[in-house]
Image 1 (cartoon, one colour):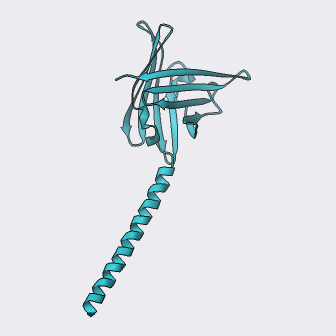
Image 2 (cartoon, rainbow, N blue to C red):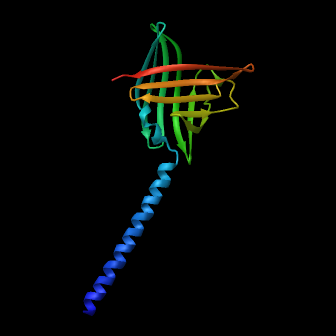
Image 3 (spheres, one colour):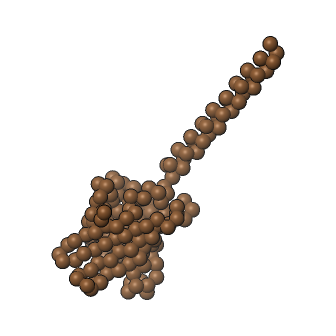
Length: 169
């Protein structure tokens, strides 16, 4: 009888400890899922295309690591390249940065835009010190549709430009 009681006591203690460990893991997972990380933008991965007024634009994204996505944006008119930029989306610590590089802008240096919020399904990246734009906003309203917006002030006037893409299969 003593052996049975000891066995039951060990079993109860082990079960409670296991439940507590699972409860702690669930709390930890909830905290991590509430924290913004680059995985929230995994929908961006792939090739996107926009056709507008004889211009064709592409935005192409690939996952390099769990904390780094590499992108490229290019706008073409026929065989002529009108605009080209390389982009990284990078998680550094608890922050995410959208970092474009355009060869003939900002002396070809990267310009970091810090992720600030998600509002109405829009992902905001901001750099209030940049001349224009100060905001870059991405939205994925439908699985095969990407909206990108640049916005900000120039000469005390607010401007914004929208770029709409469909996913290339």
